Amino acid sequence: MRIDLHCHSTASDGTDTPAELVRKARAAGLDVVALTDHDTTRGHAEAIAALPEGLTLVTGAELSCRLDGVSMHMLAYLFDPEEPDLLAERELVRDDRVPRARGMIAKLNELGVPVTWDQVARIAAGGSVGRPHVATALVELGVVPTVGDAFAQEWLADGGRAYVEKHETDPFEAIRLIKGAGGVAVFAHPAAVKRGRTVPESAIAELAAAGLDGIEVDHMEHDPATRARLRGLAKELGLLATGSSDYHGSRKTCVLGEYTTDPEVYGEITRRATGAFPVPGTGGN
Image (cartoon, rainbow, N blue to C red):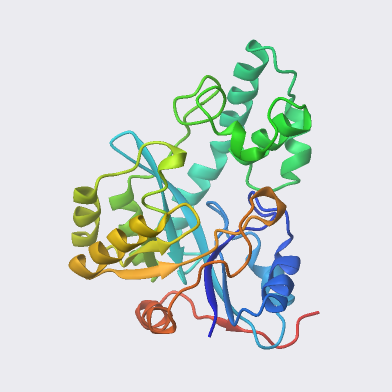
């Protein structure tokens, strides 16, 4: 089995619609794919409706968190999307995204960059607006050559000249909410140092003690030595070790199935989840 547990669609900052994503996942030879858009489950229904035969969908979301001033992401799998406490927190985070984007636009304007809200909203196309949409606007304007180049201290990196904070959930609270909704919690790309500061391994141990289920080990932003270190840490802490592409369509260079999760680990995730079940494809529409 080939299992990719971290993908994004146009419901947040990917460039493929949910339907396009699941079709491409099957064409890429995947057996299981997770749709984990940022702080939203809005793309799930479309993905399920289009799910090809032979592909199983894991419903999920990537929750924006912050610990001691460090931004981090928590992957939530197979939770009940209507559970009121987790739903309220997701809406709080999502609702703060628009004023945050407007704040970044204002800072960019002060720096002489003629980006506009209309441009960013067009790029987001109704999705959960975020920094990648602002970064794409900078590419369109010729300010930077790639989306990745926009995530530098000169522009949109944490603490950068045009950076604006948003509401982010305490990760210990995120774990409590995910578990309360019957889901499984996995810390996404915990050592992605190119994005800025990362949480120390001592904090991962504390999160494990609080109920964290796993860490994303195999990821494009983890070099081989980092993956080996994280795999050892997961074993030491009794955490599941997952692998994923973090696919965003054309917005990033990663491809579907570039990194995958061991079938035994996937099986354990499905055994732990009580809020929802994986959805097998029946041919789509």
